[in-house]
Length: 137
View 1 (cartoon, rainbow, N blue to C red):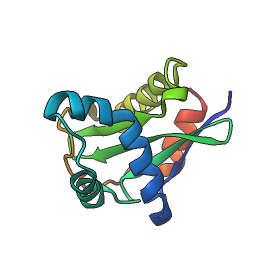
View 2 (tube, rainbow, N blue to C red):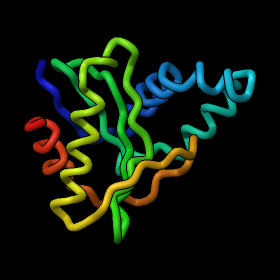
View 3 (cartoon, rainbow, N blue to C red):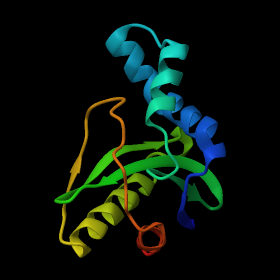
View 4 (cartoon, helix red, strand yellow):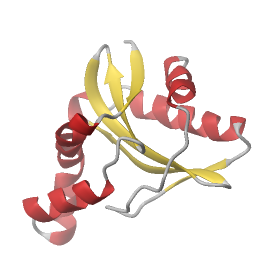
């Protein structure tokens, strides 16, 4: 399986929302009792930016979304969501290791955010370097 990552585009907003819903709906319903479509879409619209999001592709198919913020002292993983069909194949682990390596190469620690709906900060990660890192697993 060929694994790639590409910078998100403005037109990827619906794709990213779809992947987020598939990944998070059950958790949201278990936690808050209901998935409120309009509220979830508003949260997504506030946090989605092509500058902070990347699309994960496996064998050319869009299977996930990742958002990371390059802070002065660390790289923060804001979200890493995969479609159900892409889970349990090591894809998330490869992407996570790539982000950790990217941070280490640039003298930064890495941390994950557990806050749902947290807006992603401005990111300066090099898509080309992160993409090569994912491709090299």
